[in-house]
Length: 215
Image 1 (tube, rainbow, N blue to C red):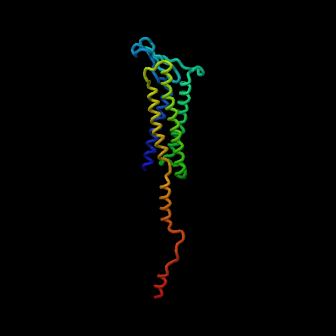
Image 2 (cartoon, one colour):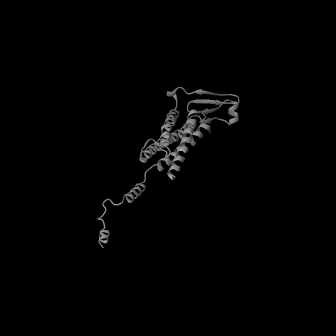
Image 3 (cartoon, helix red, strand yellow):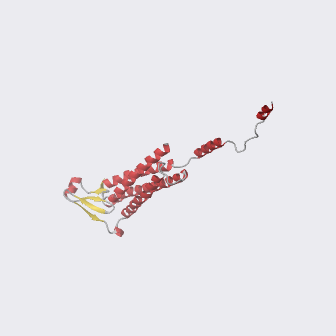
């Protein structure tokens, strides 16, 4: 029962973390760059929001973005962050599906419990790989933006990526740890089965009843 609760908690955390990573991948407010304070930059139309797919200019009456279509001319940190975040978004789908199908409340035919545990462990490893992609992207991108233009503050998309990465990391650890079979459980089950079946070679029957019948 305890493992089921831990597995379900890890699944919920991983699912929410995966949604957070998708939101971070799809939006463009990763970092906000400016040479002056925020009000001055808005008046001068120099407050920029930089993301994976576009550079946006934020002013008091205008918000427009320029799509980053020149893939080969982009800095390495943008290309790498793009690839890792897309990979994380894709890996999250089979990972969540595997963990969901390994729940104790879902039965796929008459499969043994060991098959569910293997599926759950594999799903947990995929979730950990998803969190690893998120960690590299959400750490490398602001560092690269700071060296390129000067970083003023973090954006909504980056916070979403950080939260999603943390949830996936914790959820993946919980799922992987609670899905491993322990040898103690296997030994106890064998001992219980042996006690129910009795000894394999019973001894010779007692002759007391036969003697009492002749008396």
